[in-house]
Length: 371
Image (cartoon, rainbow, N blue to C red):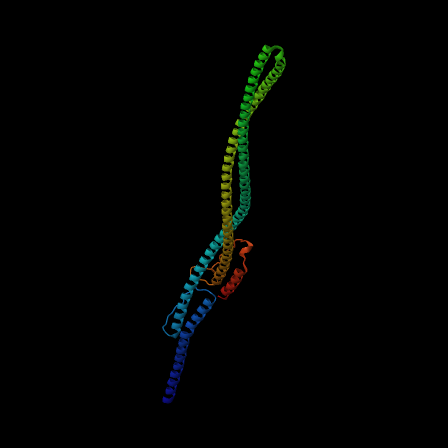
C-alpha cells in the first residue's frame, strides 16, 4: 500500500513536471518566436517599401535588441527616403525651371545671333559702300588737283594775254605818236609847198616849173595828211579796242585767279573728304571685325546655352528617375506611394541635342537606374 501511494505520487509529480516543462518550453518558445515573427513581418514590410508601421520593443534581450535595431533602421531609412524624395522633387522642379530658362535664353541668343548676322551683313555692305565712296573721293581729289593745275595754267595763259595786250596797247600808242609826227611833217610840208607856190608865182615864167613841183608836193602833203588822219583814226580805234581787250583780259585774269583759289579750296575740301572717307573705311572695317567677333562669340554662347539646356534636360530625366525610384516607399502621413512629378520638356532647337550631352545623359540615366 505504501509502495502504491509512493508510485502514485511519483507518477503524479512526473506528470506535473512534464506538463510544467512543456508549459515552460511553450512559454520560452513563444517569447522567442513572437518577436522573431514581428521582426520577420517588419522586415517583409520594409522590404516592400512600407515604412509607415511601428516596431514595438518589449524586451532587452537579443531579440529585443534586434527589434530595436530594425526600428532604428526603419527610422533612418524613413528620414533618408523623405530627404531623398524632397531633394529629388526640388531637383526636378529646379531642372524644369533651368530647362525653361535655358530654352528662353537659347531662343534669345539665337535671335541675337540672327540680328548680329544681319548687322554683320549690313556692315559688310556699308563697308563696301564706304570703300567705294573713299575710292570716288580719291578720284575726285585727283581730278580736283588736275583741275587746279589746268586752272593755274589757264591763269598763266591769261596773264600772258594781259601782258601781250598791254604790249600791243603800248605799241599802238607808239604808232599813234609816230602818226602824229607824220601828220606834223605833212602839215609843215604843205606850208612849205604853199610858200614855194607863192615864191614861184612871184618869179613869173621862170618859176612856173617850180610852181608845178610845189603843187605836186602840196598835193602829196595833203594826201599824206589825210592818210595820216585816217591811220590815226584807225590807230585810235585800235587803241580803244586794245584797251577794252586789256580790261577784259585783266578781268579774265582776276576771274581765273578766283577760279584758281576756288579750285584750291575745292581740292583741299576734297582731300579732307578723301581722308575722312579713308578713316571711315578703316573705322567701318574695324566695326565689321568687332561685329564678326561678337557674332562668333554669340554663336559660341548659343552652343554653350544649348549644351546647358541639354544637360538640364538630362538632369530633369535623372530627377524623374530618382523620384520614381523613391516612389515605391510609403512613409507616415502618405497612404500611397510618392507620385512622380510630370516633367514637361521644352522643345529646343536641333543644336541642343548635342552628342556629348546625349551620351552623358544616357550614362547618368543608367547610374540612377542602378540606385
